[in-house]
Length: 493
Image (cartoon, rainbow, N blue to C red; front, top):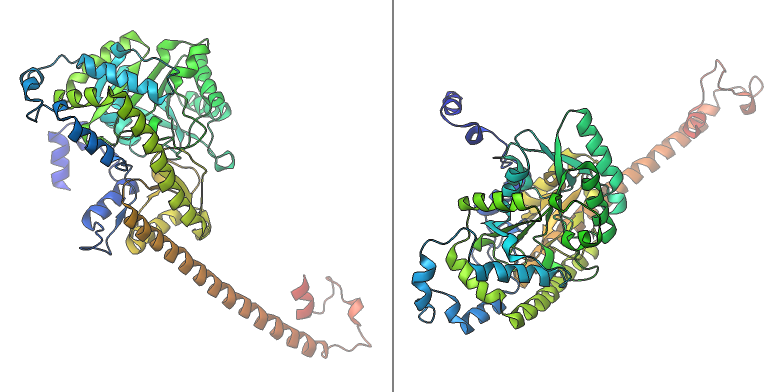
């Protein structure tokens, strides 16, 4: 305790505060996996990681491209002649070829309905850095953003920790599949205003993390109208744009605003190649703003989190290969759809449902029927059983600020097919065991009820002899009678 006090005096508020969010069950699940990771041979009883949204399903296509294009890397004999040009300091605008390739890729992911300007592409260290950079540009410490819940658990860290900005949840309900409504936005905004909280904007994820759903055009138009009316910002996190594997299609906010009378200076996009291409280790994050001042400020800030020039050089070549990109996007959709179907179908067979989804690297699983009671405490108890006994790291809804207990995010793309089967077997065994226990308890309750009825029936017949029919017949007994009710009467009321 004394050591902690001394640290608080020696270190900054950022270094000593608890706003990072590391103490949430979301990160606790990662720690449980790290301390006991599953391995089919060396640790078959370990924890299976289903809390990490990674996408290695198409790495074979990427590895094939790299083998066929050795000159795309400055670390090969074929690309060595570019080494001197790439290894030296680069302008923090980024390599022109890289910005052009990323802008083109973003347009292609959106169905080429929007053309993105390479001059507005600002680099950052992954989506984490891009989101934080956007917040630094848009808000001051103490300001707040409306964020529809359930929302990405890491936003507590990304948006709040170093910026000093607050999050005001906009609570969405399962009754309409957690759709974002204008009414919910207005309610959260007005409540914040009454509490003297300065709302600077709205932050959304589209496709949604953790729901795995895409926002329809009507909802997107409603969001743009809302921020325009309130004169606040809209940050659209679109890092899962290319993970859509069935209809409806992904619609970028950039597409929606084209035919709307809105203030373009209020619209900003965060993008990344971590999910769509499966490159979280490359730390490629993008801030794309329609506001010139934000673009300029974000570019200055990008000095603290640039993408390495070697990575830019490789990706510029890869993303400029139209044939490869087209094949990759088609195959990725097929593989994600197949994996999603295998998982959700397996859960369906044991009575576990999920929100209907068509994007992302996860789905939103409904475990409410397994809760002892509909509380966050009961959800946490269930989560502890799943991670400690079933040995699956799935993330509880409370980590995503879900207002309804019993929902869990399950990542399905970060493992091989054999691990998928092991995970499904564990879930099936757990659910079926729970049903057997419930049935056993139900049988015991039914037996107790039957014994109770028989005992009361015998007691009622024996008690009836206590009363002289000539003094008081059964039809004369009333609730106001001074003579005690028979057990038979009490049993029926």
